[in-house]
Length: 400
Ligand SMILES: [Zn+2]
Image 1 (cartoon, helix red, strand yellow):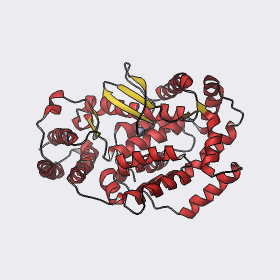
Image 2 (tube, rainbow, N blue to C red; image 1 turned 60 degrees about the vertical axis):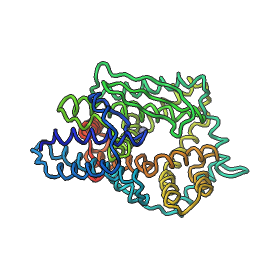
Image 3 (cartoon, rainbow, N blue to C red; image 1 turned 135 degrees about the vertical axis):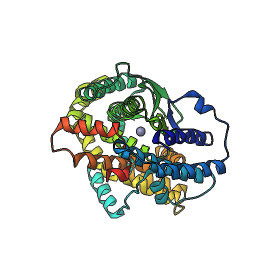
Image 4 (cartoon, rainbow, N blue to C red; image 1 turned 45 degrees about the vertical axis):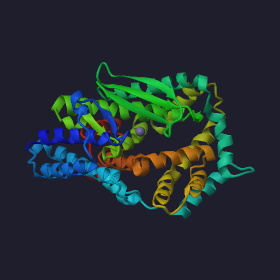
């Protein structure tokens, strides 16, 4: 059995699982006929995945394909767990994240979170709950719906320009932006193959000015669009590693995808460059006053320390320790969001479960991995190692 043969079986198996779960196949651009398989029962799929995993283990990988084999094995084991879950098996939050994403989010010290809240409380004095004061303050930085496209386009153009300085992309690489509503996510990149993506931005909730670069870099450059393009170019087209033409969402691939998309923001923009670009270009385009921007950025930076609280709430809620109302109240407290926004967030948690760890833990794992290989201030090397990682994907345990 060769790796190419087991890789093809893995792709077909993932597609067959996708027939049981709407969002499982995040991207696919392999042979069309593989998508038209007869539907197989979950018990058949479970048997097939066991055989597949055993066959991958028994494959002898030549020197250049050791990492390929390891990645395929970790991915295939995650498919097995996902099928088991579809069949009714329940896993704790941490067991699930380890099985599906190859990582466990560290447990949090709530006292430390409260210290961060106290710092924010001093920065935003006044009446009412802290999340309300935060929302009133943040409202000054909301991009009006009719300015959104101009702001977002400028952010994408700049992210692309910065990325193309260091990463060679296909000449025809392209994407379309659509503004949508009624989604549990704030934005999504649908990779269609041939270096083309559809980026959807959800306008259910106000979009703040700082989200423009977040979204442009995360969904586009050097985030999901670039990651998928590089895998297609280097692995699927370049090496014929067909397993990369399918991207199962609930799999270890997502920790690298979300982690690199988030870390990619700071690869593309240093903090100072980003603030300068936003103040000089995006604020005027949005017709916003940059007067209180420094305080806003200070607050955003402090808020970063609260990011893992979202994982904690998801864990307690999904493990059944707290009910829905408690979960929403904790999100309001630690994410400092409104009741409506926290409810949407909980909708995301219900739909995607332990997937939430891929954003912050993924970002920290990717950051650590890259920064231990790159000297301080060596921009060129940082981009090089980052590109290398996106072109030769590693799961969380492979980055440790
Ligand atoms: Zn993402």
